[in-house]
Image 1 (cartoon, rainbow, N blue to C red):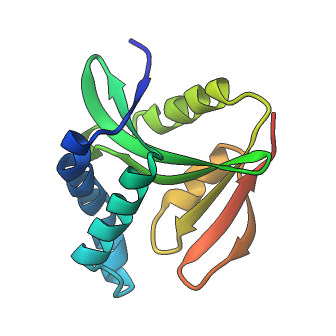
Image 2 (cartoon, helix red, strand yellow; image 1 turned 180 degrees about the vertical axis):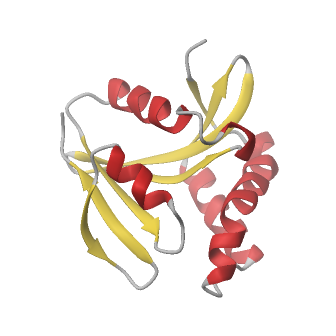
Image 3 (cartoon, rainbow, N blue to C red; image 1 turned 135 degrees about the horizontal axis):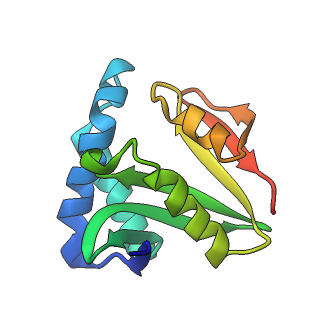
Length: 143
């Protein structure tokens, strides 16, 4: 069954917050940046802005992501997949589905330096274009 995206609703908030903590906590703790209240505030900000989407397959929520238009590009944020489905090519499938929904757009993402996600995004065609104190800034040109 194909990947489906739907806008996140208030009823999804606690589950998505928990997912973000389960996927990011160890990486953030390694650099002394894990703060549950900061994580809650960031997820709340994205939900309230209407940028969070739930990723579903077979009727089940398996992750979330956020999108903001950024000029000719789309800014990705809060890309979290349930740990039980990671490592099976699902992330690449999700990104391919996003590209199909937003043809001709470039892509922009900040990747936490302490996480292994940079390699994944490089495999998706992203290149390093800058850095911030805790993040790599990566971009992918339009198809």
